[in-house]
Image 1 (cartoon, rainbow, N blue to C red):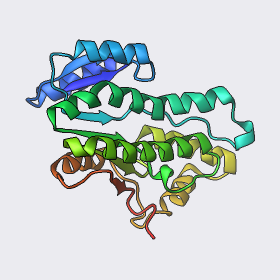
Image 2 (cartoon, rainbow, N blue to C red):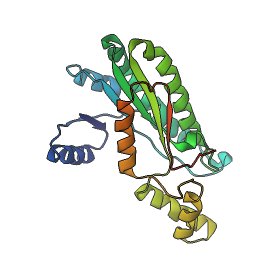
Image 3 (spheres, helix red, strand yellow):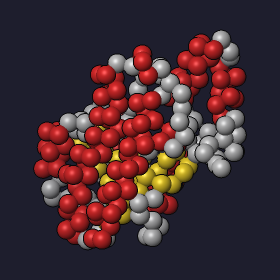
Length: 224
């Protein structure tokens, strides 16, 4: 397993967890938003047959009405959430096609299917990611490469806690009330967990007929 990101300390800590569990992990620092950095990563990994690519980089971006969003902030969100996937697929997809096998899973969001007010850059970027997945599935699928999107709903953890705190301050309600209002939108009346996201990725890798699909892991956030 190759762990890729900008924060070497966090990568090393994650690699240690994997090794302690009996696995193997290689760490490579890279800014996946930057073409030069991704090209360098591709050269570093030339000796490895990268057969599984999980594109998990992303940022939440600003929470504000469209007319209050700066162009630079919009561009930052698309760089992290869409450009990074384009660059990584461009770097490692051709070798998968040549070998006739491979899996690419792009981590999207329920926000790509269910609009969230005051979150236009994030929602638009996740919708774009779904479209990119569809196109790549048709380009690479005939060669035996599968490309899919996993769309989690809100994932319990520090990031969502920060969101609930900000929302409580904006609306003048308690943090518990802000959380209850948000998770109340889902059929299961709860958030998903990090372990559930990881398990879904593993399950998708075993589903050989899955290609060009959007897998909803939102606990019913977009249930019809």
